[in-house]
Image 1 (cartoon, rainbow, N blue to C red):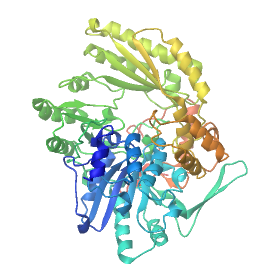
Image 2: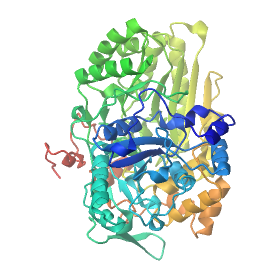
Image 3: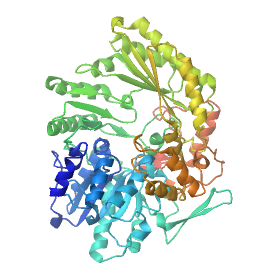
Length: 611
């Protein structure tokens, strides 16, 4: 380790964030590889190392001959200050080499509030933040992740965006880069060829034009770029790379355990949920495959906990067999099993008994709305009876802590719907009083609300967000409606949600706002320690824009969206139809009951699409 860096680490919080050397990390000799990529996570080490996508892509790329992938995370403020003072550029953990020496930097963008950190990491590495100012072929700067389903806000900074799942796509991008290096291509030639790879969006090959009212008129493809970029998926998950030798962090992280991915996609179709539409169609791992991989991952890491991961874990068809098989192996070894993302409508006594056999944790359900009317609007497909029945099962089984998650500001929401959240929480409390196995321990019911954010590629992408003032009024109404001391109410900061909505539905002009925020000190904006609403408002104003234009404005049915060039498989026609169903208060059955023809099955070669 560099002597200056070694001195710096004695003066910062959590120095293990910046040292590397973890168990199961992969180090390759740079002289023996053709192309090197730094996987850049624009948040802290403990957040990034909890990300399953990082572990998958890191392993998948390093499994390729002649390719190397290393990791880099956004430094906390104290470390950044020390690095800038000492002139130490941002570096990758495995080798300690500066990011500027890598052939490609791949950023993971799962949250819009990380955008400023991308710019800050590039600058800290001594790399120009704008794509147009990086004239050489390398380092190539690209990004993937859910936030890339609308690539336009970051268009000025990224050379390309990887749309969809990256196990195969990232390798194809790096393979083309290897060829370009070998044959001496310049950057424009590489980008034109990269645009031919399915799933690759090259921002510089699209020209936006705007109407007089500020809305987008069109996004014109240039130089042979495709009209639509269709997302990539891994059709057969069991044949894809699966991380059984995950890097074991050298300091505490948010999710410090083995994460076992059950399936991708979701059958439910909640109308607010971007992930539920972005990851369609549903593809599952086999039960025996998962048992084998879980045991290998636990043996290779030494973890004492494993969590089952998906958008809706209790919808996994083989869940009883999987949990029984896991517990048969885990119980003698004192390894606990956790099941997040449980549905309130299919929580069973048998499942509850499995969850608590090694170690009991709290339970979390997400009704999202307090009234049945509003749950039907958002297509949650959870009834009050089902929720209370699940709570009864839990309380009879000895649970005495329960968290309930809701959103405020959903389309068509009224004050009655807000008060209904308090009434539902009271019904849960009454259920505990009726059925609790041990009332002497008391009960703690936590109600949490967040501000609804209308997201691209959902049926609510046309909807407006409520104002910060209106959200806080509804918070006060709900707070005054909760009277029991056994019910704790927490609400999320709405200003962050306003900016998140503006960024998620923004066009290319928002890039100037992001850059302005960063130049004025913005970074790590998902952390309250760093987020400044005034800084964002000033940046929007300096560009002649407002966050309200993007967040609070209801879209016209025929409006052109900045993300229309991206095809996630689910058709815009289907999303519009689901929006109509929402306003009619009609629910759509889940995919197991009936295929509603959303279009996502067209992405699977073995299936035919009816549309």
